[in-house]
Length: 306
Ligand SMILES: *[C@@H]1O[C@H](CO)[C@@H](O)[C@H](O)[C@H]1NC(C)=O
Ligand SMILES: *[C@@H]1O[C@H](CO)[C@@H](O)[C@H](O)[C@H]1NC(C)=O
Ligand SMILES: *[C@@H]1O[C@H](CO)[C@@H](O)[C@H](O)[C@H]1NC(C)=O
Ligand SMILES: *[C@@H]1O[C@H](CO)[C@@H](O)[C@H](O)[C@H]1NC(C)=O
Ligand SMILES: CC(=O)N[C@H]1CO[C@H](CO)[C@@H](O)[C@@H]1O
Image (cartoon, rainbow, N blue to C red; front, side):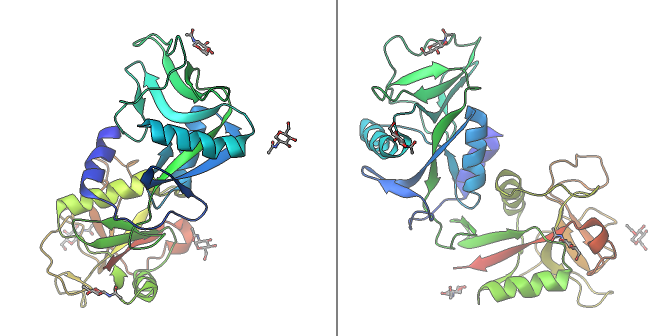
């Protein structure tokens, strides 16, 4: 998963803007925003909380890569946690220490005698001690307060992902709607918004990756989640076209699956190669399927150009 995320973020960058609501920037770090959570959780629960809270921006437990950030974070947290130790995003999972946000683990602020885990044998997690703001290597199952870090918001706004390469924003909705309802809902979001179009395998992979990494989906009722895209046939006997009139230059519909009029992508990793609906691929369907209400598994992707 880590490799996937690295690949994704080299392709999807984020432009400078404001901190997401409820988070603050700290002196010395103008490209990250922070939020303190005082309810104690295990390290993994804390990391999951950060990721879920930042669904539309890059979010993790905080990393600390220099002394200024360390000092500013300690001040921010000291004021809010009342002298409690707290989790940062460092961990050593039978390997050298790394940060969960993939920042390089260069700056170190270990307490004397720390870290004391045996690389290769222990899974250890980084706890910042309240008394002197130094780091300790501890068992991740303890419940502690924590601090999350977030990227600045994209220029698309709070509910959109941004591709710096394509100057394009994506928005996912998990609802059971027909293709035409999905189209009109996307168009209402913004004058430049419509149902998503996909013009390369790279773009397709990025969308699947975004969905699986950041969108919290309720479990489907027996089926996988499907997302409508802006591909359809105007007449049943015609070829597919994109709603925005862009050229149909990349087709990811497996052979024999293009008989219906409207198209959705299967973004669900749960369905593996060789099964009837391979993840990442596109499938045609009735535009208003009978099973919409029964299975409740049709969402959609909107796109917007800036
Ligand atoms: C912080 O500690 C003080 C003194 O022990 C206590 O009065 C106060 O309620 C605590 N605040 C929080 C948010 O726990
Ligand atoms: C490492 O140090 C921490 C903090 O003092 C302690 O809680 C932990 O048990 C130690 N771990 C090992 C493997 O000795
Ligand atoms: C699509 O149509 C072709 C030709 O009529 C047929 O052979 C194929 O089985 C159909 N596929 C599906 C999934 O219905
Ligand atoms: C809509 O997109 C065009 C480029 O396709 C851009 O020039 C324009 O500023 C956008 N409009 C808005 C309101 O963002
Ligand atoms: C996830 C979702 O939007 N589910 C809805 C699907 O449709 C039924 C019937 O209209 C609703 O009750 C669900 O809430």
